[in-house]
Amino acid sequence: MVRRSGRRPGNQDTRTSILEAARASFAEKGYDKASIRAIAGDAGVDPALVHHYFGTKEKLFLAVMDAPINPGELIPQALEGPREHAGERLIRLAIGVWDSPAGTAALAVFRSALSNEWTARLLREFVVTQILRRAVGEIIEDQAEAPMRTALVATQMAGTMVARYVLRIEPLASADVDTIAAAVGPNIQRFLTEPMPEVFKQS
Amino acid sequence: MVRRSGRRPGNQDTRTSILEAARASFAEKGYDKASIRAIAGDAGVDPALVHHYFGTKEKLFLAVMDAPINPGELIPQALEGPREHAGERLIRLAIGVWDSPAGTAALAVFRSALSNEWTARLLREFVVTQILRRAVGEIIEDQAEAPMRTALVATQMAGTMVARYVLRIEPLASADVDTIAAAVGPNIQRFLTEPMPEVFKQS
DNA sequence: CGAGGAATTCATCTAGCGTTGAATTCATTG
DNA sequence: CAATGAATTCAACGCTAGATGAATTCCTCG
Image (cartoon, rainbow over all chains, first blue to last red; front, side, top):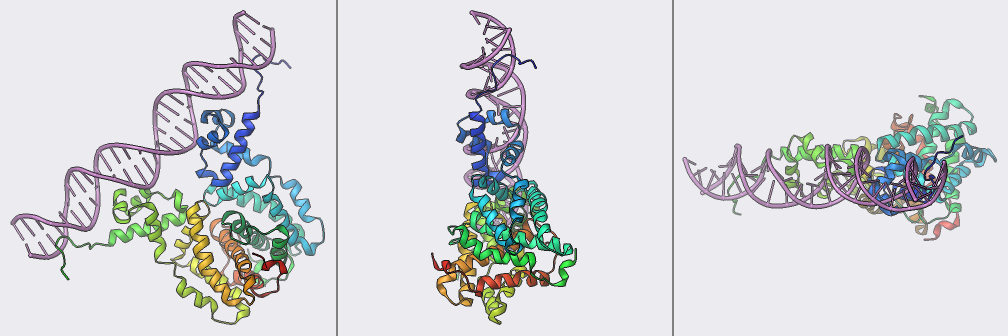
């Protein structure tokens, strides 16, 4: 392999600092209201440099989302352990992700999904279908009920995230993981394993 | 009383047609993405006329929200009936409102609240504090637990709305009221009346 | 009829956005 | 040292937004 001459693409500092500024901005304002100009300002660079590195705003968003969302390692965590505590494990796992540094990315995609159609599809078809449906599918028994039970689990999970991280309703926003898990876990558990009306098997 | 001369302020048609176009637009796109220009276009008038009638975009939004949200008549509906079915009554009431013509306004404020800070405050402080807290306060027993129980009810309610009306997750989005009430009602009921961990009394 | 004033429109301002292409700096390599 | 080419900046284009104030239409009352 012939190394071409010229300045090496070194100094990745600015690239990652752009990524961090973008992640924070997307998380705080959502996809639409987060502006490349503001992101560049936070990172201390020219807006054109953002395009130089990431091309378009959409690609920048996808670059921000790229690393942290890794369903491959989340699903096993959700599944290991006794089936009757799967609900609590799911909500603990979700809050753990959202409270971690990677959580700002989750908040970003979530906030964006609520006002932007293509990110909404991203959330619906990727997170719900790929992650939740697979995890829930392993836990429940009657697969005919899988879609509805998955959707119901999604209501409680999404609602907890909205109330805690978007609307910041107290005292939920300041509560610790144990409290929320004890309160919400059993309800998710009911959606997973408790008997449900026969009508669920439709659709 | 002396009626001043000149053209009467009659012909409220255009004013209300602007309001209807605004309600539809806010519901579909949220506060930020709904543009006065598009609203004026839908109503078949000049954008400046919108300002003439409503002043600013913010006032237009508040004018849209003014009529339909009437907590005074909702809270009694939520309270009448046996206490052990309050959860199901709450979710039925909410879905009823959202599926009604007034629901577009609710969807508007909701969609807006998720990407706009001042509408988020509107939703949090008005809906949660004024409506939910008052309704829940009448149902539960230990008032020290009221804030946390209210917030928990809000998670399940908001989550159901997000999944059904914003993200449109199937089969929940197409399910009828009875199915959802049977599935979600008991979980809200647990948040209302079932014993909860001692930690709830903090904050 | 003829004025008064509301209803409505027109043209315009300012601000911010994403994006583009040319220009400039500068570390590395031959 | 000189050339290369990535890193970075500058200036600008085209677009959309909310808002404003003057101009115009036209109903209504005296």
